[in-house]
Length: 567
Image (tube, rainbow, N blue to C red; front, side, top):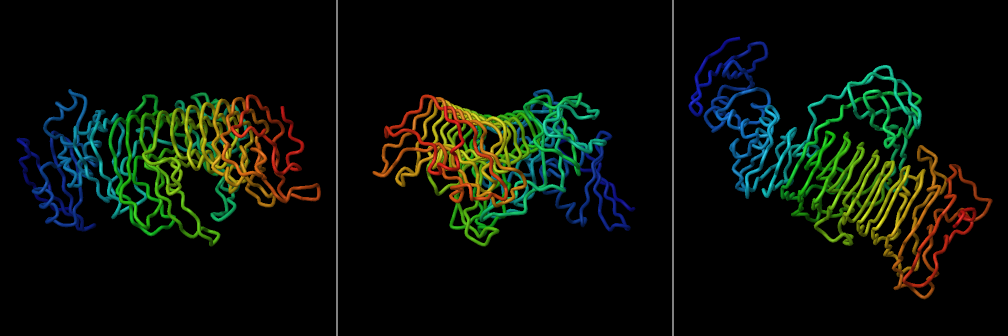
């Protein structure tokens, strides 16, 4: 090592700067010495260091410099005493033109270090370009009335979020747990506190998709909540048998809630080729106990082509998340060629929820018409438990690879309606659904729901009324495809209070059916299903009315549903 020591006057504070060069690695090290604290950064040349030193009004304006060190800047005591910092404190311009991502990242890095709230500057407009610089949020953040322009036309890393809400708690592998059983009440492990356990068996594949986007399935996965004693929360039950566990991790649950409030975000959409190259440029939630309140997200610049989005709000590996009083935007629908070699419309989402528990959307809306078929359904989810819509107006509720327990109340659903597979109790109450079916059991995953449906005090506006084909519960299962699990229809369906708006029907209309024709080949006892599909046992009907005056029927496929008991 060889070096040179310099002094740099920075806002009346003298920093000792030591330049070191390593012959072994041919790297230049810059070390800042201040009040016995040290930070170090490497530069490829002395020129870059000099450029950095004399072209930054604040050393802290470079997020990498701050993140890797603990430099004290003037005013630290003032910031800590007032309890918050703003982006302008770290040289953000907020003029809608200058890329402020470095200053925004530095502000949060400082706030994380000192446990401070971050506040956006009032009336500021922050431009965020395509730099790969995820902002680490670990403290309460008030975006206020500030606007954020996120430009996705040229990005360095489409997989990186712009903001990532993270925990300071670290995950850990669990030793000694080699098997688990469905419905198990307790695990034999010593835990530091309550947490999320994620378990995988890579030897077993579930959700083997059927259709234009067919695939070979995914590793058997489950996520559930445990307390310090290893007792499993009864609301997040284990849903699979794990004869062999290949991976199991424990992530502590943050006890203190973190809040994200306000903010007017606009994404300038990417113009990429329309392929399954998802963009993750939004807000990633990666810790438990988070509340998002009063946020708005708009989309501009959607053109003739574009890659899909994996959720502006992207929630995963977390529990107890509430998004409320929030305005979001459905994404334009683009087509590509699916894995089966035929054209498909690509799912593109403003909300994505994966491996998450106890997630609630409350009093949320979307900017575009929920009935406009040019835009894909706003939400998609996988591996979740206890999803809730409460007083929401959205184009879609969706559960791809399973949800255990879901509730939709006081809400209005648009053209893509309710799409789900899963287990447990699904409640829809005091809600209006305008779609082809009231609930669609996704046929690409076997139209399976192992549990119960409850529909109370709802309105169904069937969009397929002109064809005369109207049904409440839709789906398809030929019995010839292995989805990686046995497929069930809900064992019991209770409908107490439903108005079906079916006035504009054709002359041959026979009335709405409870079930669509799930298998046109299953019309007599000669039909053999390689993978038997278990049909509903019981339907309880109360207070059903139709605007057409025609009574509710069971199904066009009378044979398939002949053993269903109707009360």
